[in-house]
Image (cartoon, rainbow, N blue to C red; front, side, top):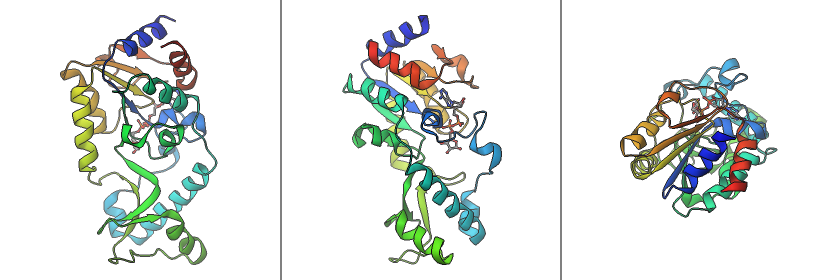
Length: 248
Ligand code: APR
């Protein structure tokens, strides 16, 4: 109860709250996280960007994963955590959200696009790695599923890839710039559902703190960075955030 009151207080007293989410906010929608007890990396290995570029079989694996994820995403909905965060953000027009997630569930929950920066891209569409032309996944999935064909970009012949950032792929410059700027201006930085294991994203809380921000983390398990936080809440996101949204 004490932690809930402290969390609510910090939100209510914040002028520029910055929310930072990871895969943990989507597990209650049925999407596994990466490093939790039944995380995706427990049974899969990451496909590195250099392998995607150099190896056709890596591209096949990557597209098959995206087809599996798309099937899952077509059935999932934003959960209480997403909906509560949307409500909390609505209480302060200076709220902003940086997410590591690629599932589009924050957008689906009603958080306006202009209040969201996706650091690791979005898995609900694809683009050409050379000319950046955007593609609906259907156009790429169909020939792959029907004939095992991975089509090239019809504009420049380049490689098509889902619009997510893989390990070893350069971070999106504009999104990183926005994230760094928002972190430097925030007076409250709230991490929700992230193990803070992947840089440069995991470096953002420290950047916010160095600019005077209070740090809060809501996560089921401890993280390497818990000790730098002013408030550490090890609770399930959905139920906790719902209580916060009801009482701010
Ligand atoms: N409530 C609270 N915490 C939860 C819940 C829940 N319902 N479900 C999962 N968690 C916690 C887990 O305990 C874990 O510590 O969320 C955290 C999710 O951490 P990760 O799986 O590492 O996900 P994330 O931090 O988003 O990973 C960062 O790594 O693989 C890359 O690109 C991928 O964006 C991802 C990045």
